[in-house]
Amino acid sequence: MKLFDVYPLNNITINRAQGSYVWDNNGAQYLDMYGGHAVISIGHTHPHWVKRIETQLEKIAFYSNSIIIPLQQELADKLGVVSGKTDYQLFLCNSGAEANENALKLASFHTGRKKVIAFSKSFHGRTSLAVAATDNPAIVAPVNETDHVIFLPFNDESALSECFKAHGAEIAAVIIEGIQGVGGIVPATIPFLQLIRSLCDQYGSVYIADSVQCGYGRTGQFFAHDIAEVNADIYSMAKGMGNGFPIGGILIAPHIQSKHGMLGTTFGGNHLACAAALAVLEVMEEENLMSMAKQRGMYLMNQLKAIEGIENVRGRGLMIGFDVPEQLKGLKKVLLDQYNIFTGEAKPNVIRLLPSLALSRKQADEFLEALKEAILAIQTNAE
Ligand SMILES: Cc1ncc(COP(=O)(O)O)c(C=O)c1O
Image 1 (cartoon, rainbow, N blue to C red):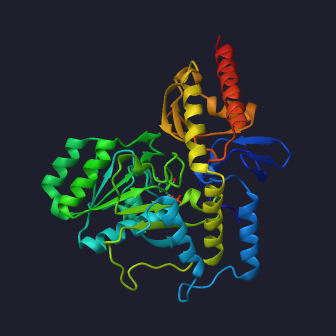
Image 2 (image 1 turned 45 degrees about the horizontal axis):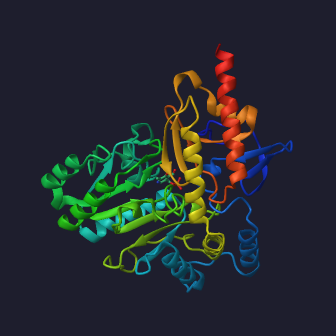
Image 3 (image 1 turned 180 degrees about the vertical axis):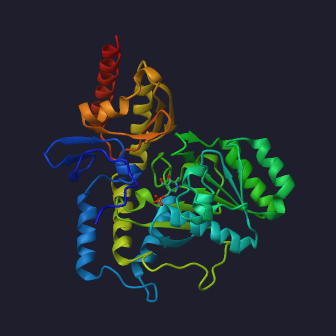
């Protein structure tokens, strides 16, 4: 049987990983500035995470949500403390798309309304409503097309106010990434997030903070949206939550009430996933990873801004992007092929850095040196 060919692949097989490094099947070492797609939060194969999962595996890996799973409450308590949203409620699922799907569905149940506001260049996942709220027609199948989603320009306060003025009573939810990831590392402005909060209050709509990529401590705050100092009604999470063990979830404000059967999942919140997620939060606390991410991110940003050739360095904490001008086209590939460094990208010309929150200063320097050399090599070759 063939694999369904949907991913353009690098011709590399990774079979070992530790911290911010991975190794291929020939033993070559790579620096992972991509965090395996923003997923590796505490570092690959962190010993505490491995031990927690192994210990759990020997007891029980899975039983359905028809019984009490104390690890879920333990995770909810810990998440409350680490995120600062102690009075929120937790629903667990398995991925980012699923988290947003449930967030949007819950907003619709809660308000009894159908319309969702999303923004230009947004990415919220590939399932039905999540993809309908994603600004990329190429990945929206005909069956996912809906006129329930209104797309507005990102960070445009007057467009948002106008839309609420015209349709406020129909709006179930506004969904927004704190920093757009796939869209090219574009932060939402503080006044824009504050306006979303006040319009949602005024019209009884639900503010959904998609924190799948920008959340879980990556920016130095638990949720990137926290920078605006207003609370969202629902936060969606996944990626960094399990450090590679599949788990997602939504944090739900106390005023949104649950009802049996409203949401549900077979695998969400299983014993093994909860153990992995608890290990992540324990390590984040123990190793002070949110403040590490903030510090390391500031260092990287300052150093990157001083590098000639790359443009528009931006982001927060360890969610950083920069533009690669036409003369340096191919920089990402040179970094991978010649310097063994994985980076992320956003079309058409953005390099995205999403390393583990435990990236060391030495590893940051290793990346910066390689980047300077790679730029020089491309420039010299072009002459
Ligand atoms: C902001 C955002 N939301 C949702 C998703 C979807 O997450 P998943 O791929 O786990 O379904 C992603 C994935 O890249 C994302 O970046």
